Length: 144
Image (cartoon, rainbow, N blue to C red):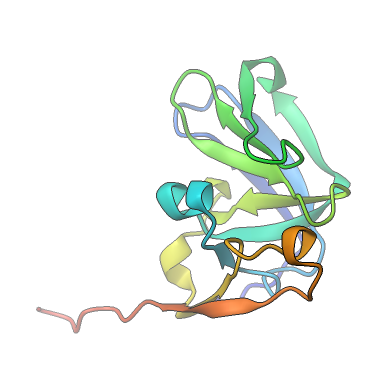
């Protein structure tokens, strides 16, 4: 992904929730997590400051889910179910925005996505954040 612009429009699948977001570090913060929830959800996220998301419509259509420590809040559209963003556990002043919800962006635009070790979260272990691995996307050759 070569476009590292910080400001993006986004929406859920059905369009009920529409927002604008200013990314903290463009796409340099792209990542996934291997905790039980994120592993099942499978989203690739990028970072935004807490005040970096402006809802243009449908904020009242968002539902949130919390589990375990109930610190992180995972937001999704109550109509289509698409996860739009989350409030991070490690820093509640940061949001993780689902790149698939950003106009013109796909999780498959990123060849290598770092996977953070949410199973052994720093808030649980007292240690530093740890990388669990890398998720790699290799596109099929044309005509394949």
